[in-house]
Amino acid sequence: MVLNEKQIQTNLNQLPGWEYNDDYLVKTYKFSDFKASLTFVNSVGDLAEEANHHPDIVIQYHNVKLSLRSHDEDGITDKDFDLAGKIEKL
Image (tube, rainbow, N blue to C red; front, side, top):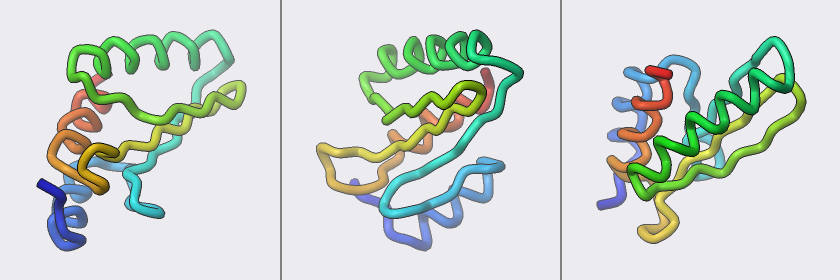
């Protein structure tokens, strides 16, 4: 079920640094170097595979931008927040 904007904002309060931008949940992580970025991305990939829910990922040397959206439901759902919460525990 697609969440409305109020539900999205309420859930964002539990995820520091995440934003709702252009119909995506978005966060950029900063790392010391490219290798650390890749290690993080591989860990995110493992979580995404387990959840069968895959974020868009952009790697720019020591920055990793993640964008989450439930494409099959054309909006933000609980699956997006569940995956974001797991990513925050990495």
